[in-house]
Amino acid sequence: MIRLYYAAHTCALASHIALEEAGAEYSAVRISFADEEQRKPEYLAINPKGRVPAMVTEQGILTETPATLAFIAQSFPQARLAPLEDPFRFAEVQAFNSYLCSTVHVAHAHRMRGHRWVDDPAAIAAMQRKVPETVGACFELIERKMLRGPWVMGDIYTICDPYLFTLAQWMEKDGVDPSRFPKVSDHRNRMSERAAVRKAIAEELA
Image (cartoon, rainbow, N blue to C red; front, side, top):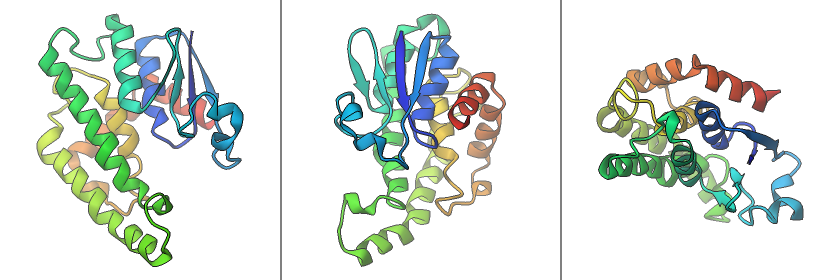
């Protein structure tokens, strides 16, 4: 059985949703950031990075959302969460998820975790002021060039969709007005109506 380690209100929600969509047999283990459980030896033995998600599988432990999402799609091909039969289209899925991981999420992290990059309080404050601009620019690109509609990859629902949904939920706190991005907002609204999404969110907030 797969075991997913997550924290509420984090990118781990994307993997949680994907496991539900895949019909996977799994258990979910909550890590409290407020109690700094991610820094405790018990969790660091699972994920030395001290972050979520971490996914324990029969083959070993996976970290990083693009990797866990790809693993879910490939492990449960009957769920058709990625175009596995087409190498190029699957690479497009990976490219989108890599952009969310390496660019969108990093821009968002500048709001709360500037200490990862600098120590100067003034520099951290400057980074925080920049977040609405940088995150907004990311979603502008997604809106205009990357979100094909109605789902990220077009007519088929893929592992890109729970990941985009997860990060799009953070826009307001990042100082970004979702109404600027009607396609992203519509996608977020439709995702919130899916049974798998509702179940994953309910479990994380219980």
